[in-house]
Amino acid sequence: MTTKKRNRRTHGIGSLRERGKGSWELGVHGVDASGRRVKRFYTVKGDRAAALAKLSELVKAGKAGELPNDKKLVSDVIDAWDKTLSVSAKTAERYRELVKHHIRPHLGDLRMRSVRASRIDQFYADLLAGRDANGVVTREALAPRTIGHVHRLVVQIFGLAVRDRDIDANPATAAIRPDIENKEIEILTEQEARDVLSKLRCRNTHGSSTYYRIVFLALASGMRRGEILGARWKDLNFETAELRVQQSVEQTKAGLRFKSPKSKAGRRTITLPAAAIAELRLQKSTQAAERLSLGLGKDADDALIFRQVDGSPLVPNNVTTEWRRLVESLHLPKVSFHAFRHTHASQLIASGMDVLTISRRLGHSNASITLNIYGHLFAPTDKTAAAVMDRAFGSVFS
Image 1 (cartoon, rainbow, N blue to C red):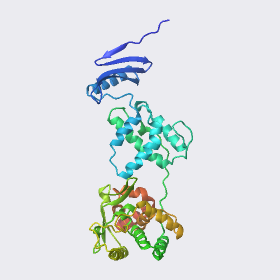
Image 2: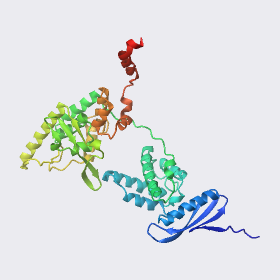
Image 3: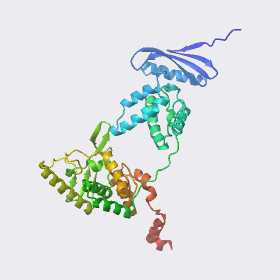
Image 4: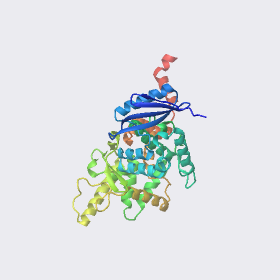
């Protein structure tokens, strides 16, 4: 019995061979990204017309020196993606941890062109179940929100492969990730906020006044932890009661650094209540007396409002740790430090302030972010709208 040999047909600098029903092998001569002359083979599915169209596309890519590498691994693209990162040091640190512990072990050894959306679906299911790359349960399940962060990175990585023409389409955009439940934000009631400030103020241990004022400013301004720790005396105008947010303190494995707000909206001016200004005046006089007793002289122009004795910034994680310790020792509400920002926002919303003003005060890049976080706190206004129309046009309607 003889086997029928399927002919290879040449088309310019490319060749086409039918491997089986609906399967075609494409051979293309060209130049790769490094300028070397190469010949590569690709397998495509579909009818002959689709195969010819793909062959024509590959031939053009070969002439342009953009011939895709059919053997490139996902890990190769991850390496290239890592070099394109343009985010803060802290964010880059977090991204690389997710890649190291989750994306590389599960997807790194796969050929980029072989990965389908269903394979990424399986990857997310493994993370959700705590399974390793071999399908064995080895750890606790990953939270859906964390898998959402992983998904964004996978989309970026495969997006880079599309841009470099290693693949034709991004399979991650069609992948199914677990649903993320909206986490209820932590908000202190007015009485709880008063109790927190009262108990902090009454503490007599060293450094309590500084910590009390940090919390006071967080509640009074809605500033983020890093923004408060990065605030300088030169950013504060006592006469106008305005504090300019120009930088924040960021903590990474490499140490502390100052960074500018990541958006134009983040660089803002906040008007502080009189009580907060009074506390900051006390903070300044306390620091001046302390420096005098140590023989350190006048403050530097860029001196921080809240700092260590030697003038260096407070460590953000230490501030959070101290808050957790105070929660236990003073029997305070068991909320995170970030709850002060949420509490500030909730008070503004309850006062009837418009969302755009609130968004600007919080430093959100647009009002939709504010609505996404705090939308449920805005009281239904449809009945109010009807009342407004009654007042305006009631006589006409009647």
